[in-house]
Amino acid sequence: MRGVSVEGQPSAEPKRRRTLVPTLVLILLALMIVRDIVIRRWSGTGTAPPDVTRAH
Image (cartoon, rainbow, N blue to C red; front, side, top):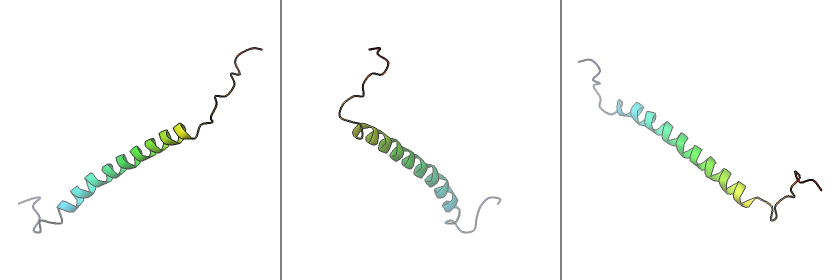
């Protein structure tokens, strides 16, 4: 029979790696997005900058 391995376990390892890598990439991407939002939210100055487009 073609495609059937003698040992059952080694064939499961590549499939697990195939699903683990995209999962880790998505988790890292989500962490970077949340980190960026948190930094932008709490690193801002207390007051708004002056409006430079208004003519005096």
